[in-house]
Amino acid sequence: MKKIQSALLSVYYKDGLEPIVKLLHQNGVKLYSTGGTQTFIENMGIPVTAVEDLTGYPSIFGGRVKTLHPAVFGGILYRRDDAGDLAQAAQFNIPAIDLVVVDLYPFEETVASGASDEDIIEKIDIGGISLIRAGAKNFQDSLIVSSRTQYADILNILTEKHCSTELSDRRRYALEAFGTTSHYDTAINQWFINQSGGTPALSSNIYAFTELQQNSLRYGENPHQAATFYGDLDAMFDKLHGKELSYNNLVDVDACVALIDEFGTEPTFAIIKHTNACGVATAATAKEAYLTALACDPVSAFGGVIITNATVDLATAEELNKLFMEILIAPAYEPEALALLQSKKNRILLQRKTVGLPLKMFKTILNGVLEQDKDIVVETASQFKTVTTKAPTEAEVRALEFALKVCKHTKSNTIVLATENRLIASGTGQTSRVDALRQAIDKSLAFGFELKGAVMASDAFFPFADCVEIAHLAGITAVVQPGGSIRDQESITYCDANDMAMVTTGVRHFKH
Image 1 (cartoon, rainbow, N blue to C red):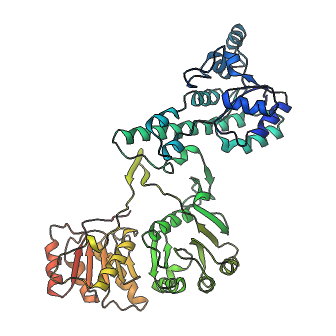
Image 2: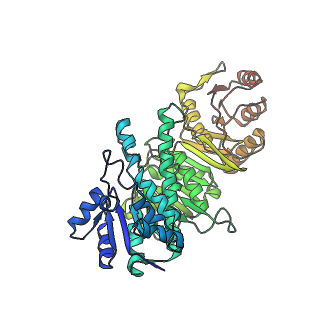
Image 3: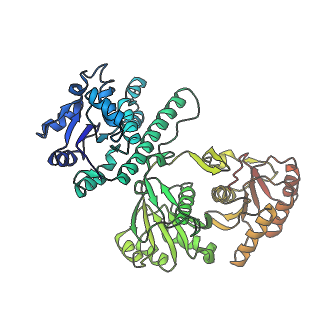
């Protein structure tokens, strides 16, 4: 345990700081401060020493240099158990600083506000980030509080331990401090890359893990794997009911959100199992959309994750309540519907909020990390190129658009069979496109669907004509595929000979 006897406070945002200042004062801690923070403390009627009185230098260059001085950094960094450091501290009259409370200039907020380059550059913190690094480096002797998000926690620690800290406390805060500096520097780096015409700046959500907003999960993909989610789930959802989300839950929820965002405002339901859709439908009402989606594959729907873009009303909830599901996600719930759905103890109910999502994707692989743009391409009829003599009908075009949306979010190799506004069946994750098609056909027949007049979507081109041959025999009348095979003409010729329509998009949607 180390007793805090002196503290340096220099923060941009003052909210939440007052109770910490009061507690330090009540425990006889000597306070040092700068600028606005000094004024804030003085207005509380609490004595505080200006950093300029400690250093002998005023704040200079428009506030760019305030704390950058040996009297400050020496006080943080000198080792309390090192005889040489102790002698030098005494020689140069450098007081110990046991606690540093700092937050950084709001760089990201300034960028997001559309401010000028000059204003953005002025929000690159120098002294603050240096104080954080110094306090974190000497965690053996100093405690560094590097974000206002830590105020409630540190207040509890200092209250319980009477303004003393344990090494484990100081080490943990040092870890979080280096996360803060890493995130801050990454944001600045990405802004400069963007200004230089390089890769567009990443959303802050992409590297939010560096802020150490950690959510420990029960376990990972399997029980023997530990797992943590880095991010702000509260910004994404209000959890209205149920147990905590697991690793696999989150993976499925992510797949749900990505799929439902392909659809507009017309009521749509999607049922996801192991990240693939086993039911998707759009209809005039939420109830009709759900029942149509469920009918696609009611066996796989058991224990699935369900999402909708519509308000869940009581009539829809009564149908949903008949199915065992892990999670239901909706933008809103009518009160009676919510009360009914909460009758199942462990069912997770999420209400989705409007929040921007990252445009980059990352995956650890081998001894490094892969990064790519998120697949945000959505093909519509305007991108279709009819390559057969027969063009698809208007109803077939709408069905092809629908099928493509589902196909884009289904594991490769993928074949999706659909009619207008509903999924019939899909073949997912197969090593052969022919196997994917046969799987989809077998599933559709098993659930009693008539394929005559249905359409087919493929996530990649057909290397041979075998898929269109099998589709024709099953009753498929229109096909959409990226095109680009050196043997495209074989598939086109077969379609022409059998009164089938084919359109190409030029866009492949592999998903591993």
